[in-house]
Image (cartoon, rainbow, N blue to C red; front, side, top):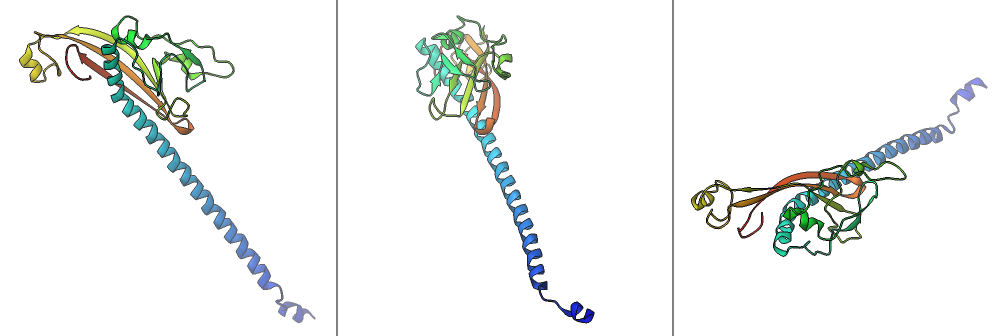
Length: 218
């Protein structure tokens, strides 16, 4: 009887098959988790690059907007830019600027917003309460899109530029006309915060120098 029980191997194949299925299931789940993790890494990397590219592009486009404001004596009109009323990306605080505030700060009629913006954020914390409100907000894909760019004019100064036309032509003091035409320049410091999907953020700063009387941008 004992010899027959030891030699009876019926059901052994079923046990082996079940063990193999369990092992294969674990391997498959591990591979799936790794794939999902890599997909998330790739998505986050893409969002970070999108945010950087938006900020980088805005650094260059802001100089054009500053020039337009100087030349038109008003806030430049574009269907993807909000100057007056919009919600900040962090905290959802509603910001209301007066018409032509951007133009007035560019021209020096108003001080730049270097002082803290003390907003009341209820409920929950508001990170933007520690920063000045942006001068304008850009929605690259339209004002209803989720991507957001906030532009801050942090400081503005004007100065006279010494030197004659030869020095200007040699690039000693920047492109522009000589002292016989206009020897004044306006310097503006700009901060750009760009937000992509999943709160990916890129922050860049730039200093623009506009030589008054010179053709072109900054």
